[in-house]
Length: 403
Ligand SMILES: *[C@@H]1O[C@H](CO)[C@@H](O)[C@H](O)[C@H]1NC(C)=O
Ligand SMILES: *[C@@H]1O[C@H](CO)[C@@H](O)[C@H](O)[C@H]1NC(C)=O
Ligand SMILES: *[C@@H]1O[C@H](CO)[C@@H](O)[C@H](O)[C@H]1NC(C)=O
Ligand SMILES: *[C@@H]1O[C@H](CO)[C@@H](O)[C@H](O)[C@H]1NC(C)=O
Ligand SMILES: *[C@@H]1O[C@H](CO)[C@@H](O)[C@H](O)[C@H]1NC(C)=O
Ligand SMILES: *[C@@H]1O[C@H](CO)[C@@H](O)[C@H](O)[C@H]1NC(C)=O
Image (tube, rainbow, N blue to C red; front, side, top):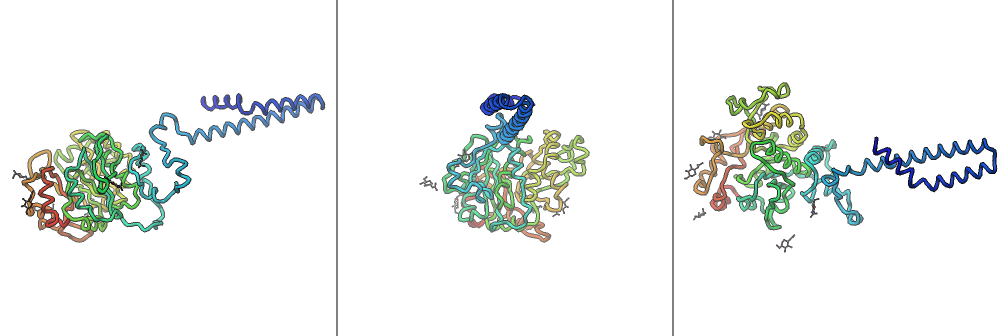
């Protein structure tokens, strides 16, 4: 209200001044020429004209106010996307950049990003030939020591079938050649602290950035210690052909499972809803949109899932079981070895890498559920691999993994 008043003051002082002067002159002339009463009548008419004039000015100001960002937000939000002179040559409303932003860096806040990423078309048909893509989302602290293996995995594959996203610590720049599949694929990142909600925030940031590409249909989370154990065509077919997402979700009765539940989450999340699972998920687009659109359950986890409760091990398994249970396979496609008694899974170094070991991850003789059928392929990816594992892996990748 206060600012509106000061705007009106401004209007009174400036623009209308000349109009006012001439009107007063006119009124004087009238007073000289016509009777006193007629003069009064004209005076009333012109003053009501002023009122209307000022009202219009004030509305105009209010209108501008709504479009102009508030000063304290302007530095964070409104980015003059394409510069105006450039716009005259370029089509600023082009479909290309809307369907898949070419430049992954942006200045959107998480709040703005998640809102944008939550938009989904109502129209069933796409106005372009949409080929579903797999989004490979790398959550890493710094460099990717197994990058040469991943490069080999992607080489020769059509960019219409995959996209890569990298969330590293702020300030870190992935140093890769412009021919690399990872070139310019870093997204705006924030600090991550293991075991806190900030870790899950980074995962959501990856999902949201990947959702901005309307062709991304499957979303897989990976880390710097992950490797693919099948070649790209197999991974692509397996994921895009699946009717389910791959989010491990199970009820663990011990203190490492149910023991981490907080009764403060009642009545929204009950103990019987509580699930545990691997952090390394694979999601369909509809689940990905659902997850970044949730505020209510995210907030409960942020408040009440504190160490020794870890949001990255409980939020997705619980949330998906509660709302998308029938769309989930309840298993993960990322192999990990928990056989050793340790709070961390086993790390494989150079001496552990043998043909037999990789074959065992690829197919150990067990069948897994896949689209209401069974398949010998349970895992597409595996972790955790030390940097020393790279050489022997490159040595056997073609023979054993087919790339
Ligand atoms: C990408 O966007 C960022 C942030 O808006 C901007 O600083 C940068 O110059 C852009 N890069 C290119 C190649 O357009
Ligand atoms: C890639 O980098 C090389 C030199 O490192 C340069 O000659 C080439 O023009 C670059 N290509 C593109 C598409 O930027
Ligand atoms: C996964 O679990 C949910 C809920 O517990 C269940 O509805 C669903 O059928 C399970 N998925 C498969 C593929 O068995
Ligand atoms: C990896 O190899 C080392 C040395 O042979 C062995 O001690 C270790 O148990 C192996 N690790 C796993 C997880 O098999
Ligand atoms: C093979 O892998 C499946 C799926 O993870 C697991 O349940 C099973 O115990 C494994 N079998 C052997 C013999 O290791
Ligand atoms: C790669 O394979 C060759 C032949 O199979 C072997 O001689 C060599 O030691 C291997 N190198 C590594 C680093 O494993």
